[in-house]
Amino acid sequence: MLGIFSWAHLSGEDDGRIGFRNSGLRPEVKKRVRSYLELIVISTVMIWTGLSLFFGAVHKRSANAHNLDLYVIDLDGGEVGTNITQMVMGTERSSTLPTWFVKKDMATFEDARAWVRNKGWGALVINAGTSDRLQKALTEGAEYDSSKALTVLESSGKQIVAEMLFVQTALSTAASQVCMQYAVHQVDAYQLQGSAEKQAQTNFGALVNPLSFTTVDVSPEGFVLAPVLMTFGFLSCLLCTVGILILWRMTTFAFFVKVRYRDLILMWYFLILCHSLIISLYLSFAILAFRGPNYNSVALPYTGATFFKIWFTSAAVVLALALWLFICFQFMTPHLLALPSICTIIPNTVSTIAPLELAPKFYRIMYAVPFFNGSKLVHHIISGGYPTLRQNIGVLAAEIAFMAICLGVAIWFRQVLVLRGISDPQGWYRGSLFFNSPISYYKSDPASTEKRNGDDIEQGSSSPTETQQTPHATRSHHNHVPSGSTLSANNYGGRDAASRRNRSKSIEISDENADGVSLKTGNLGG
Image (cartoon, rainbow, N blue to C red; front, side):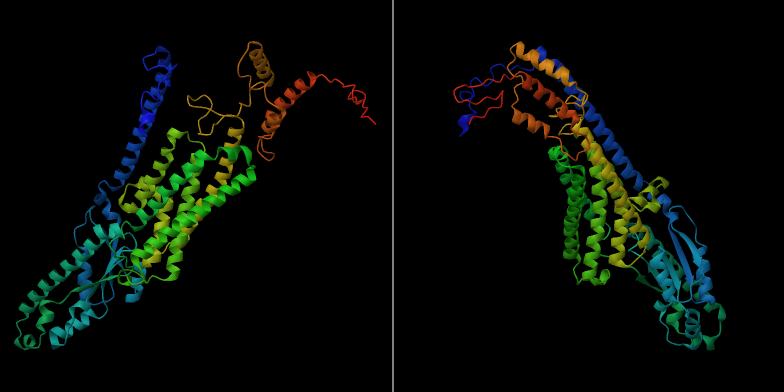
């Protein structure tokens, strides 16, 4: 079997070929080397731009931690609540720590819980009745549970990375310091009383440990993959989509030549929508397989509605990005196809991994990218936290509608370029080193083309392509232009009509007298 690769079997195959040392090949080599160097420069710029955009979002993010707002909510209204509020607000402020504020318009614990779930990063709540319970324990020896004094409210479903790195640490640190400081002050005050009768009635457990706290996650999303769940889920869908779109871009040249514009654009809408639904269905199944209906202790219960919500949300994200990328691919030459992919993947990935509140202000524009809005919707579906449904759904719907309109324009313009011989099947444009289109350039002169072909015949050319066409081939070439395409058939049909007229003039009609039939006089015999 390997004999087919032997030099004996391939003898004569290199006859007439030249080597790289041949001087006639040097101009072509120089052109291609220049093109490859251009590609290296473009790739370098894309890599450095993408990496700078990603690392710039996470560089010194602790310096912007003051953009995270935490609140003290005093539901007690007594001495304990006032002292704790003063302790927290008196702590040293720094740009590397979240900023504390006082929230005064909360009436009940449920109000505070709902507010943190919907809008806040976290809060330290002084529970109602803490001062009365502690006072009775110190003066009357009543039973006292210090864990009911304070509650730390956190919302991991809002942005799990910022919650883990800054919010949870700041809340637990502040609560621990308050508990320790208040205990020290209370013991000192007790020693100064000096009354043996009051000391005998004191609950010493409440004296030594007057305050402690419990932590409540109002929008739980505490499973292991929560920080990267939707980032890598959307990223996997996007990477699979890029491959399909590039395949469609490189292998559908004939569609732009033979299919009407109306049918062509409807076909692309249908294909992209179906692909988005299929690829997002796999993502929804993957989340179901990981989370399952039994993992409800770290998130909201997983129901059938949850499955379909995640599916359609993911489909909307993939659809918006697929439309955008396919628009870009219509006009990108092959060596630039990676450019829109990188410019799309990096910002979308950054928007979900890096907390935008901790990034420079430039990154606020990423609030509009599909990954960010889709991940917010999915995190709300899973955890119930930070509902911005109208904003996120509105942004995704507007992006899909706008991209659908732009794709219609892009397909129309690409068909114009193809039918006029400006763009070739691979996407190179006329004037490029690699351009090779089977369609003639629309500005070429049919008369000069026929004259050139006639000269070739007179000079003994072995391949007079135009003048050797049969009538059937000429009709096929004329029908090569779709009736409903953007261009009329005049660019091509005019040249074919002239060829047919020239051939008809050169045909000589002669009669055969033997059968009595004459084509000249119209006698068909009798």
